[in-house]
Image (cartoon, rainbow, N blue to C red; front, side, top):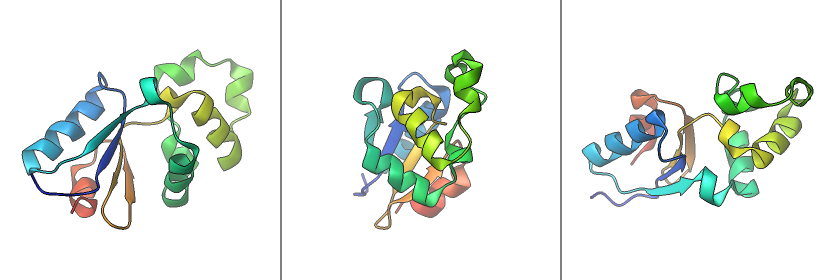
Length: 121
C-alpha cells in the first residue's frame, strides 16, 4: 500500500464512508479511520476542517441527527461558531465522509472521487 497520512472520519456503517474506504483500498492507499460514534471529534481537527471548508458544507442538514434535533437547536446554528459547538456535541451531524490527506492536510467532505484523487497522495 502507498504510504500516506490519510484519515477518514465518519461512522463505519455509513454508506458514504464505506465508499471512500473501498475507493482508498482499491487505489492502494493506506488510511486511518476515526469513528465519530466511539471517539467523538477532536476540537483541533474540527477547527482545521473549518479552516478549509465552510460550516455549511460540514453540517449535514439532511441527515437523521439534524432532523431529530429540536427546532430551537437547529435555529441557533447560524455561523461557524454555533455550527462548531453543535458538531462537537453531536458528531453524527457532520456530513460524511471527511477525508483529510496529503502533506497539506487537505479536506474533502462527502462522496467525490475527483476531489479524493486530487488530495490523496
